[in-house]
Length: 138
Ligand code: RTP
Ligand code: MG
Image (tube, protein in one colour):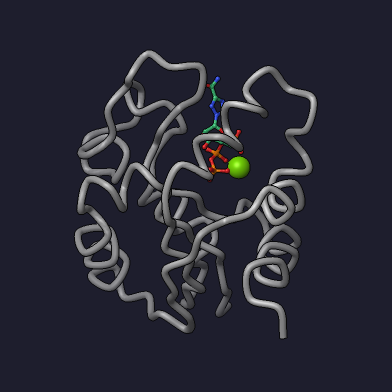
């Protein structure tokens, strides 16, 4: 079943010059890019995007981190690409993420209050529809 996923290269990935490598892995997997844009997030946009995390201890540091530089927002398309991209990305914690994954190969654990883990990918069809609407309103 063809799906669309909202994928972000987070500010750490853009700053470290890893956008191309991350896009390469997505395309090498066979997924296609329906949208791709360099964007600067806003507090308002992030409050919507991360609504499920509001009130958690890492929420404020997460928002500050996501405002620390531009992000690359993409709509990735392909068969089962929602779980497929999560599998490419690897575990949330770069130290635990398996080798072969984006976070496992390229992510660093900086020992900060928030995991700076290079990428975001939607975690369900419902989240994907919601997040695509936030980042790429019709
Ligand atoms: P994402 O939403 O970015 O694709 O990552 P995820 O599903 O693997 O992780 P999630 O639980 O949704 O958390 C969102 C983002 O918050 C940061 N985080 N840091 N304790 C921590 O240091 C911590 N926990 C979460 C990460 O940037 C994570 O990707
Ligand atoms: Mg998540």
